[in-house]
Amino acid sequence: MRFANRPQAGRRLGERLEYLRGQDVVVLGLPRGGVPVAAAVAEALDAPLDVLLVRKLGVPYQPELGMGAIGEDGVRVINQEVLRATGVGPDDLAAVEERERRVLAERGARYRGAAPPAPVAGRTAVVVDDGVATGSTARVACRLARARGAARTVLAVPVAPRDFARRLGEDADDLVCLDTPWDFAAVGQFYTDFTQVEDDEVTACLRRAAERHRHTVGAASGAREVTVTAGAVRLGGRLTVPDGATGVVLFAHGSGSSRHSPRNRFVAEGLHRAGLGTLLFDLLTDAEEADRGNVFDIGLLAGRLLDATAWLREEPDAEGLALGYFGASTGAAAALWAAADPAARPAAVVSRGGRPDLAGARLPEVTAPTLLIVGGADPMVLDLNRDAQARLRCENRLAVVPRATHLFEEPGTLERVTELACAWFTDHMAPAHV
Image 1 (cartoon, rainbow, N blue to C red):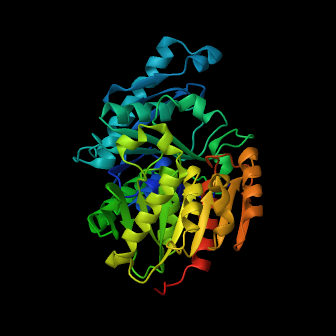
Image 2 (cartoon, rainbow, N blue to C red; image 1 turned 120 degrees about the horizontal axis):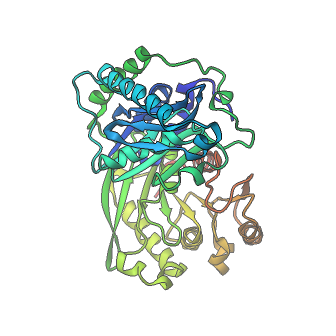
Image 3 (cartoon, one colour; image 1 turned 90 degrees about the horizontal axis):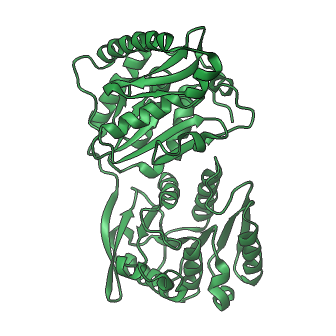
């Protein structure tokens, strides 16, 4: 994967982080190269932007090679392997650190002026750089965010080495990287334009972000928390209906998941951009989830989805709109089971990494156009989907996403799922006639 420049890399990274939109997020860019990337991420998430001041400690005779890093508030990480390999002694290390701490202080005054750092305590801190090489700087940045009280730390970069997760997995709650190429040698090799970022560009990014956030904070998102009545139980949900929506997609989550599933939220955001509404809701109560038998009770889950469908058809926001089902894992079986019920009448069904085989004898009764999406590196589930497809009598398609495993965690795979789902729903959903 190659990026034209840092802003473009940030826009692509922002798309990958869409599942965080609407949460209490602050985006923290690492000066200087990480700030244009972070600015695009902050814009995508409608989140505030600040810098996280960290300085690499470069080997004296090879400054591009990091032997450690320091940050504000006294945070410090030293790479002992690099020290041993380069022979840098304590005195040389201390001299480099003293110099870089002066730079930290100067840049803090230059970028923020008299303003304090953005509040991080209790929030999701998204730490962004233009890439990771040794990882020392990123480790310090994540530790600094935690030291300031971040409830959750997400390290997000466009490109990193293959062992990115091994190096940094303990320093962040979540790691997001668009590409981890085998031929990684330096961050700059994956950018067409990797021109050095100057201080003026950093301050301009911060100023524009502050102005934008003042205008957008508090703006209506078209989303609201709802309570779905399903028989004798009440289930929490989030209903989003953009202006001009042509339909609403109900999400049936997989085993052990909920309306907060980051993968389903990522897909939902893509549907919103395509002009479709979504209802993400919990199929089970907290007490019910404690019994693992309920998680795999497809009849029970399908019944809840049917109840939610009836509830949604009474909602004024969804009046006259076509309804569709998106199911993941065991939720896909529930979606197909429910779709076979004459009362459901979904306009379309999409399954992501699903277990349609668990819908059993219901499969031939499904009339809604059905798309089955499976990872190419998920052979068992792929075989189950092929067998299930052979039993469907409706319009259907099996789409295989190359190199994707069951959870679609590989770079670009969830984006492909979103593209496929958007195309299927928009092609098959029109205003309902009831």
